[in-house]
Image 1 (cartoon, one colour):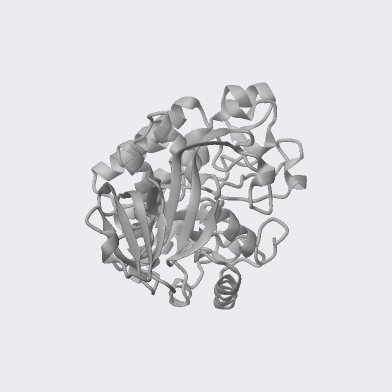
Image 2: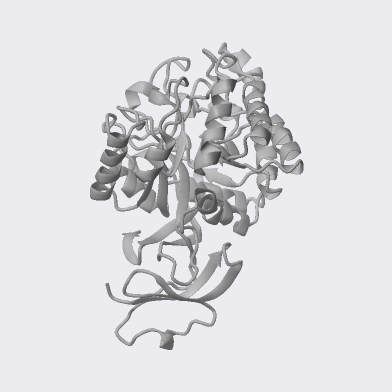
Length: 429
């Protein structure tokens, strides 16, 4: 690969507390050779490729901690090729893939398949999860040690929660011994059974059974109580309510160590957006009240929430064009994760560096991967974006195979222009 120098950039890298105008040199191995305001054009080889970016913003490639890829078993919803295209168009260079494929990723042979398949088909950094329990049934633990040795980055039962407290204590104890990451979906499934929307005024008006915030809060309280006895690497996949934040704040104040994520959907939408049975906004965790949305933003501001995820769940149109209670849950979002997050900057809800931190270095630290940074010698995974460029989300233009976006026709400000992966230009708009 030829050496490159990216010039005339605003470089924003929270991992180094950098926000300055400068240049980036990428060496022949696809690593960051030099970066910042002290990096001069003359520092690059005379044979290097020069790319003038005319004052645009460079950030580390986004690390998305929660996305579904349809292979194997659900290729009609998404596959490695289409997931890659959508991710790179959104500036996402590293993806944690969920294990709820068909068959479930819960054994060594499936791990070998998914890693091999991803290496052959995907042009993005893939970090696969395996399930916490066999077949995501919440009954028997998977072999954490064997699966970790084969390349599994963490363990999650995705949108199912381990209900058995004794089993959860054993999971945490075992995870602590092996230093593996447990990623829990916080929802008491007895309380949320047959429910599909936030409990409250909108659910009553639409005649739908609602999910109380208590279903989320009670699992968080249980798990954090267990965590004080069985300390392990524990991550709450995503929260949706103000009441959950109060539990998180109390436990962090008491010295309990864990991390928390939130879906960009819960930061940008509320239950009122569902309107008259808009099934594309049926999500898990559900959209809640506006005060919950505002509290989640404050949670990021106050470091109670560490990570913003896309919660990318592609679904075919047939499974969404059903009565609300019967429709599938989920929305695509990996391509719009960064632009939608930038909305929080443009409306003065969050500072830009805080948003980028929750999308890059924070998830990388939780996962213990050398990503989400533009430090010298790091992989040159770089997103170039125009902070001000306006555009309108049109499902037909999105690169995911499924088109079930929750933000169709939303006006956004901020567009990814280029994505570099290991120093190679892999997307250009």
